[in-house]
Image 1 (cartoon, protein in one colour):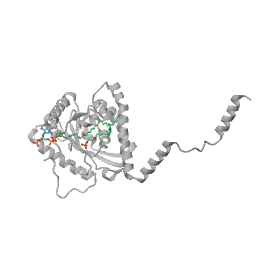
Image 2 (image 1 turned 90 degrees about the vertical axis):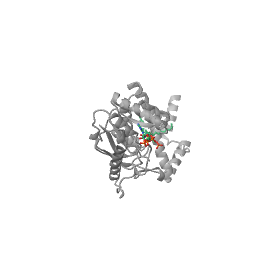
Image 3 (image 1 turned 90 degrees about the horizontal axis):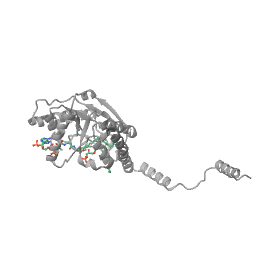
Image 4 (image 1 turned 60 degrees about the vertical axis):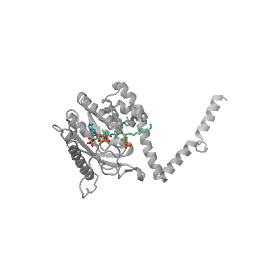
Length: 295
Ligand SMILES: CCCCCCCC/C=C\CCCCCCCC(=O)SCCNC(=O)CCNC(=O)[C@H](O)C(C)(C)COP(=O)(O)OP(=O)(O)OC[C@H]1O[C@@H](n2cnc3c(N)ncnc32)[C@H](O)[C@@H]1OP(=O)(O)O
Ligand SMILES: CCCCCCCCCCCCCC(=O)OC[C@@H](O)COP(=O)(O)O
């Protein structure tokens, strides 16, 4: 009997017999337990989902950085187009739907200062959804040290500031002003200066408005509706959801001086807060606007 035929017959007999009913491999058991626990525990489900988002950012950054280096050879705002196209796919993974209004207000020749409310690390998806060409962001410098995410931000031209030192931040912002004009770059700033999931606006810091007036470029306010209906870390809530985005008309700064900063800040704050309440379908407060500048 031909050994190959016997082996083939044995293999044919083995291939025709059902797979062995052995125990699940350890990783199968572990996976099943995690899924079971996640189904039972909102806290674990939330942590798995937000953890997957952070992991996705890390992995996507690690894969995109070489593309940026090969394509654009280093740190340049042109990498933001690559980053934007990658990050825009994240909304499908997490079931986030955007309703956009007012994008025509981004059709500004030349630089401008874009300001928007800041609710969570998910904001980056909303930012990339509408990011205009040649636009970089101001970020806290701690983000530079977040592994591949810091690298991709650096490559995309993100400007890092030390929030704890006004003098340092001021000098960086002054340099930003010069770069804006010389390199024709828009700058996106979160005037609240930190994430705020309250559904309202924190008082605005003044750097964005000093920058706009120093460079005499318009301020373009952008408002994202409140995430509280689908994202609330305190309640371990992170589901799919709809986000309304409204770009408001540019606020000109020609002829304004540093003495107009407070009024410009208040004007933008009031317009953005009213829009935030409207697109979040939250009743506006009876007593009118809250504090707009940090006192
Ligand atoms: C491929 C896959 C990729 C996946 C991975 C993701 C990749 C994503 C890539 C790319 C997207 C990146 C997204 C990054 C997002 C990051 C977001 C953040 O990090 S938010 C935190 C940092 N941002 C801020 O903090 C800005 C807001 N802050 C300001 O503008 C402040 O004004 C600041 C920092 C400049 C100063 O901070 P103060 O705490 O001192 O605040 P004040 O009250 O505004 O100023 C104090 C005094 O200084 C004057 N002042 C401020 N700025 C001035 C200036 N520029 N010139 C002159 N005076 C100024 C003011 O008038 C004020 O003086 P008087 O009270 O009026 O007497
Ligand atoms: C190296 C290990 C950690 C890697 C974790 C990767 C997570 C990446 C998530 C994208 C970052 C988007 C930028 C962002 O939105 O950061 C928060 C800051 O705006 C404000 O921070 P804070 O409210 O002042 O603490």
